[in-house]
Every structure is written in structure tokens, then in C-alpha cells.
Image (cartoon, rainbow, N blue to C red; front, side, top):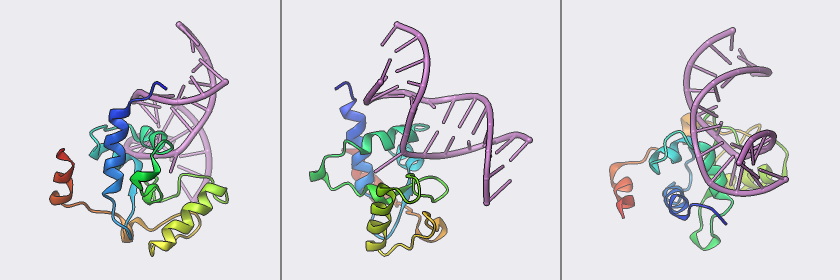
Amino acid sequence: MSFDREKAQKIWQTVVLVPAGTVSSYGFIADLAGLPGRARMVGKVMQFAPQEMRVPWHRILKSNGQIAFAAGSESARRQTELLRLDGIEVINNRVKLKRYRWQPDLGELLKMEF
DNA sequence: GTATTGACTTCAT
DNA sequence: AATGAAGCCAATA
């Protein structure tokens, strides 16, 4: 495989920081991971996230709060279920960002400097 | 090697 | 609210 393990690591590591009960977006994660403008790469890399890392992929949504998968698809339903387990309300394949958006503090971000 | 795709985002209609 | 175009770039074909 010709995939960039280093960038992937950084992305996974960033997503792991998203706490239960909150959500974030592909673009924002890309920014935090030092890859501004590369939201698509975040989604790409998620497929390859090793299970032992327990990456909370379901907490990542589009910038407008919608689930990235087509409404009604198998993946969308699974994501919806996981979000509800986190206590997040999902309506019409979308979440209210005003209510659930993750706002990282400096302490959390500093953990990533390694 | 070129071309298309896609777990995206933003701006402009 | 909906739609389209442009930017993005690694993975697939």
C-alpha cells in the first residue's frame, strides 16, 4: 500500500481526543492534524483506522452537522446508533452542532505535541 | 502513465 | 433550502 502512515497516525490521534457526547467535523480534524484543506483525507484515512486504537469515527460529521453517509445506508444507521449511545440526538441524518460541537481546550491540544 | 472517485468545505447562485 | 463549481489530494481503476 502506498499510504502515508505518518499523516494517518496524526489524524487518528486527533480523532481520539474527541470526547463522548460531542462531535466534530472532517475539516476541523484536518486542521488540528496540521493538514488544512484536506477534509477528504480524514475520511479516507478513517477506513484504515486500526481497531485497537478505538477511534471514535462516529463523532465526525460534515461541516453542516450531517452524517457523511447517505441517509438510510447501513453505515449511516450504524453511526446514528453509536451517536445515540453517546447521548447525542440525531434527527434526519443530522446533529445540532450548536449543541454538541466539540471545543477543545489548550490542554487537550498540547497532548498531541508528541 | 492518465482519469475518476470520494466518510469534504466554502462560496456563490 | 438546494444546487453547482472550484479547491483538495490519496486511493482506485
